[in-house]
Image (cartoon, rainbow, N blue to C red; front, side, top):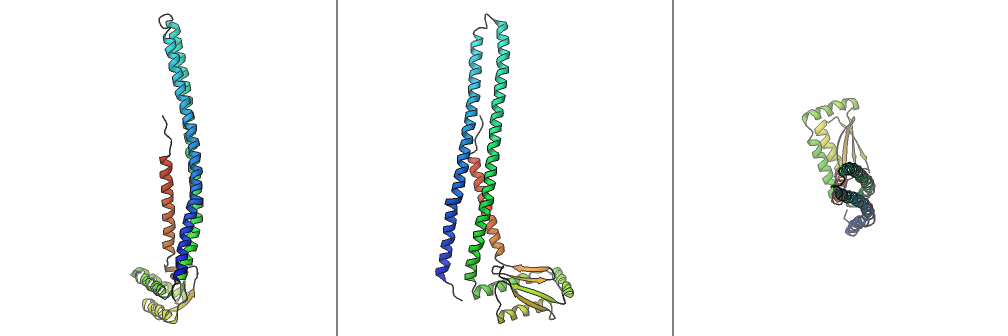
Length: 265
């Protein structure tokens, strides 16, 4: 089976276009909305700081004016000083409380929006990655790849240590030496004989092997023995790709939120 390079390249281009569209029409609008929200919170934060600075400035001006009466009215100055201190502490505490509340609400809002975006992007992009990967790998599933899949699958079985091998052999008694081999593609006569010969040599000549095609697998094979499974497929690589994308996206958004984070005076 030859590869349709035009279709293969078209699928790659479709995938790149999909990533571009997601970046420009899903990721950027959400990030822009989050940035706008951050700017609004920063403006509110600056207003609160300005109010705090004005309160401090007014307190200082008031204190300077009262100090001018110090020579004539010592008693009044003492009372006024206490009043000023009380007023200053009250307004400073109020300003700090407003700043803390605004900052806390800003962090909560940013966190909710970021996690919501990650969940939506993860679901959408992982689904498209799965569909595109399955389509491409299905078109590329020629004889050479099938042979490589069979060889890798048999090597995975060879890696089974002696203890696990004895466990599998003991399980065969409960299944009347029946095992199931599932593959993502139909095995030809030569491949069937190759797998059958290997399993007979590995687990015993009395083995009864049932072969079954399983379309859900992606270039993979599975051996089932009474609940015990030995498997290999490209599915694991696709799942690792999905996890790596989500991790990178999470790190990028965390770094951006830390860069734009407002600071308190």
